[in-house]
Image (spheres, rainbow, N blue to C red):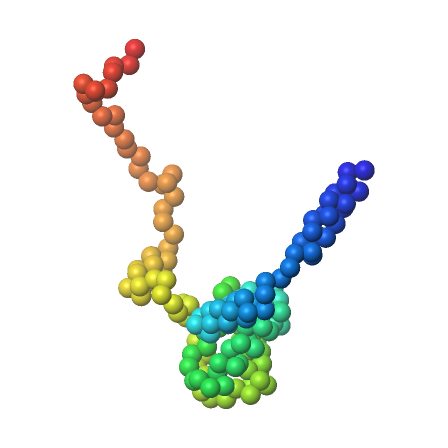
Length: 164
């Protein structure tokens, strides 16, 4: 009985969501322009653009590479392909797939430099990024249980009533 009620509730939510009107066409066009500009600004292919543990692009990867191919047809530059936790063999295969996809879309691959760098943008000053990377290279911070513990109780003052 609970299962039937859950299914009925899910269907009702789906039906109500399906009845909502999509935004008007001019607004959707503006949203698409904003999304595409973000993809172009980053110029980055992330591990989430691939089916996990493979070099096969997922639908998000296909879409973003389509946007990037339009950009790179007219503009040379860097394409950031993040390695993430992929091994060297998988990363090389992913780079190959991205290059082949762009070439098939008509991009002159000789005008693109493939890198694995931090994502470009205005979010953080490069000086601060270097400090973060230096901290990461030094290793994880010590556990709070490994640090010497010391504390002191401040002396009683006139505005704090004594404990009874």
